Amino acid sequence: MKRRIAILGSTGSIGTQTLDIVRQHRDMFEVELISANSSTGLLVQQAKEFDVNNVVICDESKYAEVAEGLKDSGSKVFAGIDSLCSLVAAEDVDIVVGAMVGFSGLRPTLAALEAGKIVALANKETLVAAGSIVTRTMREHNAVILPVDSEHSAIFQCLLAAQGNAVEKIHLTASGGPFRTWSKEQIAAATATQALKHPNWSMGSKVTIDSSTMMNKGFEVIEARWLFDIPAERINVVVHPESIIHSMVEFEDGAVIAQLASPDMREPIGFALSFPARIPVGNKKLDFGELGKLTFENADLDRFPCLALAYEAIKRGGNAPCALNSANEIAVAAYLKGEIGFYDIARLCEQALVGLNFVAAPSLDDIFATHNETAEKTRAVIR
Ligand code: MG
Image (tube, rainbow, N blue to C red; front, side):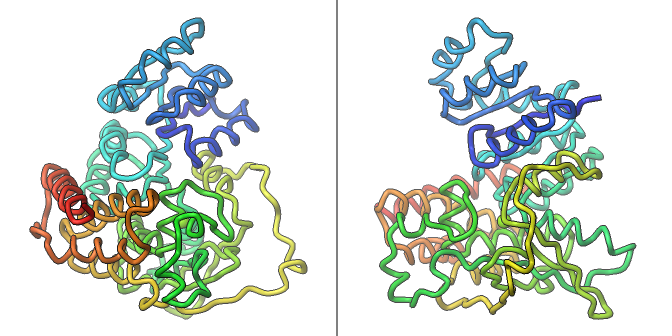
């Protein structure tokens, strides 16, 4: 039987690469549902190419445009997040690919988990903002989260070799981003255009800016804490500029298992879609003679303060990571528009943590309140 897939955020970087894998394996997968925030043209095109049953445009003002584009097709068109939440829970969906950007992915992800689905999760902000609620929901409903983030897919793959042995440490690799070798003064003056030039990965603009500040790596520490139930103190970030080793797991005897592949998101996406089988995904295979060597260095928390802030937020726990994520979303959007400087992103995030109304065991309502209040405060500071 074909695996029936729902792709939340089908027009983004992860969404389009997921569809590329489906295109290569039509005999294995069927696309049941796709959604986009506002990219109507590509959404319509995808619905036609993959003969998708249900299509959701989250921006309700664009419903008519999508409905018009698909009027002579077999696709049913819906608008808004509420529609998306009920459609992901439907019987005819086997795997939900969570590829929406930022906090907006939280509600549909929870809806999929409540329906006991397999969620291939790329939307790390969901775990950053509400890790305890997301993982509890998963357990309560016998749902499964398979990591799509390349580092977490790597850790998951390394853990298949654990044979029940306890993990001593996770070594989370980081490319170091475009400013790895820049001085603090150079980084302070960096423009969004410069920050968007990632050396190894081609990704969406939000995660590319997060990579340049290393907030992305900080979020990945928090993501790993929840996915693998390991305290953040035992998650070590190591800068590895070639992005060939996607992460490593260390055991008590000092043995380290690493996962390697060329930097291409189709590898972790494909593994989540076809797990436990492996399928070809069209990526470049490693040539070790051509690579020559792999290098490593420690992360510099002075030049990349966002990484330290993420460790601080997960150490405080409660709603602190949610506030950090919210402030970061607003700050990154402002930075992309040229409204603030590079280090203002870290400053705004730090202020959000300092001024937080701390809740130790937040409910979902507390998470939404923290997200919205922090966003408002951060916007006010920017103004
Ligand atoms: Mg990653």
